[in-house]
Image (cartoon, rainbow, N blue to C red; front, side, top):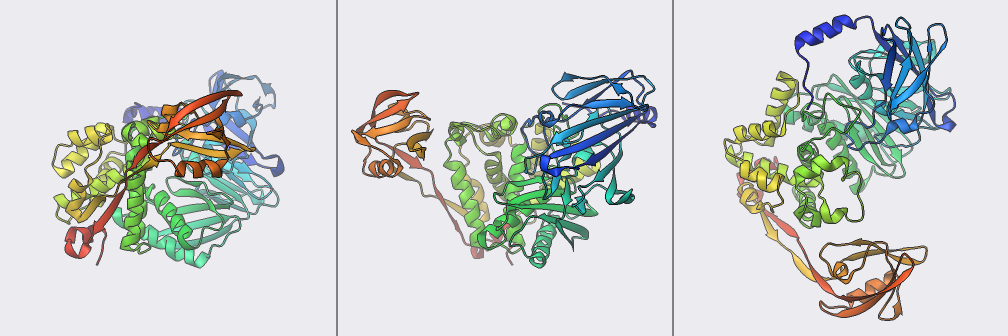
Length: 594
């Protein structure tokens, strides 16, 4: 774990680096080739060489994405314009040989053609970038601030970013703009949209909120102003204050939505362009609530590993179930409190999460703390067996947040809730100590707040895979969880047709299909001598009762195999909710009912 420097060390470092500067010039003269061009100016670095590095990941998205793979030849020159030797010393580090007194200009280009909330993109319609996938930094000098000058493509008229403008923001002409950043973390934490996006603003919770929307869609600006403001007000009320003076939403309307990514005072949302109506619109508002809640939970309330960042390798923590799971709990609760969900709609959403978690094979295999820690190698890299062995720290963490909320409401008899515990974390670790917390510190804070020992709770439900006794906790707030599980005939395989072939895509653990020896990527040719397609396969299995035998012929690696199988059965864990708020004051408090 990284330790913070002492105040004395920071002061000495600041004195020794006062003259050093880093500045960037970003341009995109030919967007159709998808290259951002970057000029990086390094002033007053006194060593004979300097190393520059590019991050391998984007904070908030826990996968080593290897951003250096998109960088072409890196060139450097001194103040005389003479070329300097540049060579790589690691996958994301370039060494520049120089004279001690030389200032250095570095030029490189980055291929940007992946439009997601965590990567960068450029074409003739717009440019979008996340700092870690475009900007390098001098190794050992991430604390240096500087300026970023952006020269948009000639047809792009707008730049949207949370970076402060330098002076009046104008440089050279009306199309080029200048921005400042306090350190590399600040630069990396402010995504940038460049193009002709629609922009509007609204005020909520005493904060100006700016919205930039790229792409056509069925959105209504005036409706968005009202509804997004309600979410902001509801989220802010949880903590009692909003830490920002200004906030930015960047929204991409595309064919396939891709979620959101949080930043300290901004977020990027990637949604289907026709999402602004009906049930899909509630999904959009839930995404807004999720990413907005992150401005407290993750960006300020955070584990030790999530700031300051090590951009060169994975940053492991077992607390993503709190960071993402609690946020998932609140994104729906915020919509309930803001009036977008009725009581029954909210309970339906919660029930869906419960049934997903308890109906997942992986819930009995992977503890949620392990799911958090292994996000880097499992969550973002699923394979055909992942459903059998993993659980979502979003969904399981959501349920743990619900249970902890119920424990707090019961303990304080409807005078306090999880909101109050989140305020404790915010005030102590962010406002007072300005640091992240460890796993042990999180548990200790919760134990202190509840005045109870939680070792068994954490052992069984966070670091273990015991089934949460939901009624033990939730009945205190009037929510009865009824077992509605069913046992039905099941073979335990998922198939699909590909190029006229019936292919096996998934095998459920401990299923009849597994017992028969069927494997993912087998081609099913026939059952009981009859040729199969997807419709016939499904119809055949519907006629089978548990214990019925049948013979499959499959092709595996072009070798025909005969498999003897028996129909099995599967218990599908399902739950229903019963709640009568009129009979329980704690239920009314939980749902904030009048």
